[in-house]
Image 1 (spheres, helix red, strand yellow):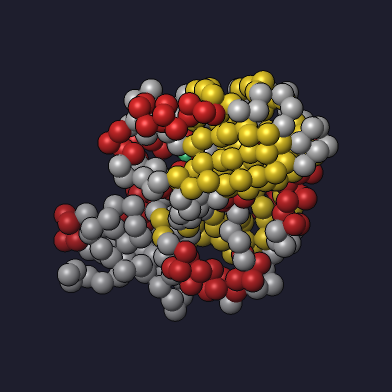
Image 2 (tube, helix red, strand yellow; image 1 turned 45 degrees about the vertical axis):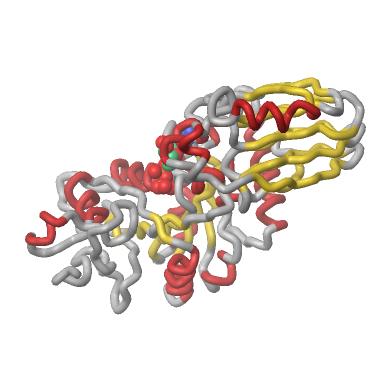
Length: 369
Ligand code: GDP
């Protein structure tokens, strides 16, 4: 029980149980006047946005609030988890407000990839998902690539509107907002966070130099992404930090690849062909014979086949199997949300089983690269 109810900054209900949930306030800060949540405190005092997360229901409530505003919605997605981080149904919830799609983490693309090809791919996929966007910008918030284009596009499309920044967790939303704060706000002037009038949306208003505001919303947690279900200690290995180095495997039918103990890929039927893995290079891949795979897993999971460690595995759901037929003469990715993908050069077709923790989104798509 807290005697002060709402954050004086953003209006969210205060709580002091979970650090990474909206409204967190340390016990000591409760005595201060005005009482503001840790997220507002950090923006005010350090000019630094931090990530908080909400579940889908709370997020949808917030989203439908946006429909009643005149806003530009900036939707950030992670290029390395495109299908996992795209907010499905966004169109329905934001009403007639324009959506700008910012595709982050392009620094992770292997060297020598043509960005225009990637842009075309994103355009096609976005359209297929039924999302209408006014613009698509590829960027890297961390490496400061394409950022001018993000600012430029926001400038062109916002008119006199507020700018809502929305995204799933771990897509780089805070990193991007921090860049906006550092590049476009006057650090001498005190930043004020202000409550959204008449509501208690947990959305933080951050004024920029030119009198405009950007509004940071909590990240939405999707349980279909590997990054959201792994124990904390495994996240670092999943999120790549440097450009991905593709791993190419020439496999015969009857061979298996283990990605740590996170996923398993069986090549069941088809001519000998190459499979290219696009995943964090911090992960270990083991090749074995399909007929030995079950035994290998039982004997070595959490040890040779890691991460996760034995202890961490106990906190993860068991695998489910996804059987896939890759058609002849297609250029296909087998996508595992939050982990990466395996490119199948399907000139001769293939039958494949993918094992991944229950609930993780696994699908076939047109090849990104
Ligand atoms: P949020 O949860 O969406 O606010 O995401 P954060 O900004 O906290 O970033 C999540 C993770 O992605 C962190 O490990 C960041 O370092 C990393 N990250 C953010 N932007 C980029 C980027 O442009 N490239 C790469 N490689 N990593 C990024």
